[in-house]
Image: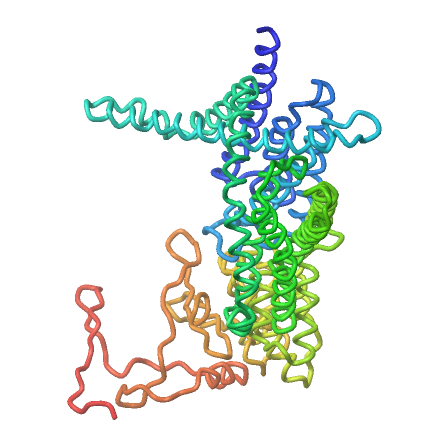
Length: 603
């Protein structure tokens, strides 16, 4: 009884630690304060919040001290990997007004994806390290397989309990609300209540599932029986699919565009059924002769399926280059190929009279080691998929296999920090006389304009814009107002003959004694802040007070007038001011505007 209470206390301690981290991260994101404003702080803390409790739950076979050290070690590794992910994360392309960071927790993929992938590493490694006592023994493998099955069932039971708990709470809240009592409903809607409660209920459910080990063992036995019944069917389907290639060919499979994806799933399910049915290769029940040969054929069929999946993946790489998703797919292919090769060799050994499944432990261990190393190397930086993908797409662009627009889109949306670095370099490159480089720099500036930079960066960009007439002074308040408009990042302030050139034109005496200002871009972009007239309001704040319309002839009809003509006219000082053609009415000092309805329509 005391040991059960001790186990429950340890799990509750872990749940409290996770609750503190989870609620702290949530609140920082809500209030837009540190660490939510810095990916290099938020991402590692989030990964620590996920990895440390999971490692503690999966290392239940270890003694208390060893268990804590193992959990802290994996938590530290998760934090270091999260630090790399945070430092190389991209920036949010759309941020709320007034947000001056460069990153936001709204980019869920920056921390959720690496946390989930690292959780797989924790799930595989934690029980293995917890069980090792000195030099590894053959019996350690079986204990590791049993621990994997046990941990999976424990986590599933805890997730089920958590779902039932919240279903009960929400149902009760709905019933109380029917009689006018909103307290429970309002309570569970509060983050300070719901977030810690989720982690605490889950940790307690894990402790209960661990203590009632007989349930997990019973479920493991039943799952083994069910998988043993299902696997012959999976083997027949695998053999039938491979034999169908001789009739249907492989063209339709490759033309689908997702052949590798479907083959990965099917092979994974087959391997999972094999390992669950045979307890990771340690057990093999008495089989009929026909069933034995069906299983041999099913294992052999996995190898050609992985070969076809590899070829399909290679075709995609040859056509479209590397992307982060395809690099992860390569790791999946390697891991599954090792397991499929082990299953095929085991099938050949079994066909010659050897003990069935005796080679599966070797391929399972090799695949687990390969998966663990791959996850650490890909997430930790040595072979970062985003960096490799950016290099691959740049090479494709240099060899004219990728258009300018496609390259910029990839760098912007999939390159993260590595793509951002390349985009920045493109905007600073020497493009004198090179039309393609000029276009690429223009596209890069427009891509960077879609993100919200720090106020200092934007303010510097505004101050670098040329001002007309020459010698015009830019008011400090106006510079700060324009410094909140990320569109100025797309401006080229050096070469006024390029489409992305921008300028600021002072309009003296535009509104009484006030000097108005207008921001123009040569390509005629009408998005903020271009083409807008800026004036100070009653409080001295610079605001948009109007815009520039289209050119008109003497009759007020619009002309086909190129926007670049106005930009060039400002640069050449050919702009004049003219009064409106018709006067307005003045009544007791009030202006009443007049508009003329023309008899003749415009051509």
